[in-house]
Length: 377
Ligand SMILES: Cc1ncc(COP(=O)(O)O)c(C=O)c1O
Image 1 (cartoon, rainbow, N blue to C red):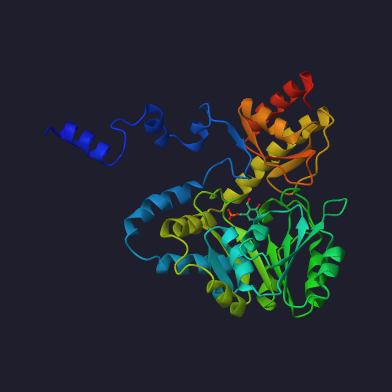
Image 2: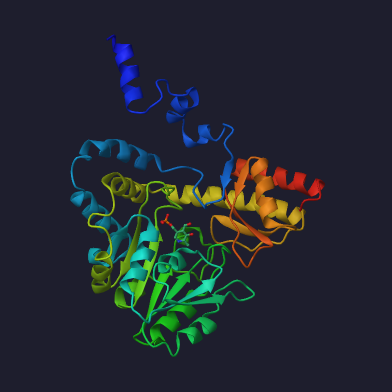
């Protein structure tokens, strides 16, 4: 058999098309920026980083393939130490996760108990509720946000009282989908006075985007207090949502317990080396935050021009009012080539819009103006 025919037959035997479509072939070599020039919808739906992954992480992944046959003990330790150093905490206070959502999952599983109560703001990032789904006996207490979209800490604290067993409190600060802040000092005071049976999962996924002098991480408190876990991610400012990497910060004993709920070696070598390279890139965070700020201004400007209320954001997304049916709005945006965020009941008069590149937000702004001309918003 001639070499070419052998290759074609071999690929067909593997179920692959003999000839890759031109688009698929070309796509492999495109940078994220070039790929966006194709007909794909602009993704303003999942709070990703439109700049892509840091160049050093890309190189680390390519170089890391060389060691793909080895278990990733060394890269795990290296990342754990680098993360710990960044937070000024011991490395046994760091638990790595396959994304920070795995930390949230471990956090729920580690507290499983026949009388577990889960207190969380509403609306918020849904994952803690989803991780409780296989355990329908968990007593869920969603607590509506305050009129300024901060967590209603008093009502949340009240909801922990009288619980017959342990209580897990989810704090999302800044909050997804509202992009709003809850005063950290108030969260900290509550944690310090909370009784032994109340545990806290503090999600700081958007930490780097926060623009407020009074905001800070609860990382140090987490190391001191065995009832607190702080979750952080490489998916947002570091642009690694598809690579899957996150971590928890906790008291070393709590970290050891959480780890027992993770798969044995839960982060792959390529994610670990990419994470390490991202941390070593001294400019990436500022670059991402800068692009995000520019995009935020473009978006605020058009929303103000059209008189559409928005919630000032401390994240890489903006929650803004639409008029009309949200599902129809999402579909119309999709037809216009823009994918926007999903519904977050009960805020069904608002759409969550992730911030892309400034030029993508200009296109979104033009689409909004067009919707206004048509009387759709
Ligand atoms: C508040 C919050 N926490 C966690 C996550 C999940 O992040 P990861 O990709 O690290 O699992 C998200 C993702 O959108 C989020 O908004």
